[in-house]
Length: 163
Image (cartoon, rainbow, N blue to C red):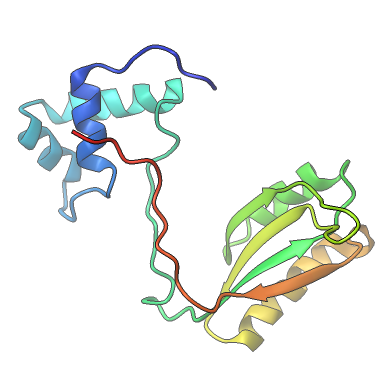
């Protein structure tokens, strides 16, 4: 959804306070509300409205997989018929060991892969067992895949609003 209405100063302040994460307290929205001089209900209502309008895409936890012991993180890339990718993408995205699942354009003839799936395991054999579950799920619909293991952690951030 494209959002064209400018955000007001209160929404901007909420975004600025939450864009690097929620406070690690039992009641994070109350802590934000206190900092802003708003009620917790107003903070939550504004966040829900910004989500609904597409101003923000999501609120969620971003785990540090390495800190949790998941050292075998593999981006798997799959060659799936285009007419089946939405169905399979939805199914694979629901698997508990998958954190990302999305379509990307092919770059033929060198890169035939159109489905990217991030699989997490504590060890490579564990990750490969999980990848085999995807192989089984796809059956004869997959025409090839590659496993690309992470070799280092890159700092990932989205857009940040300034002052």
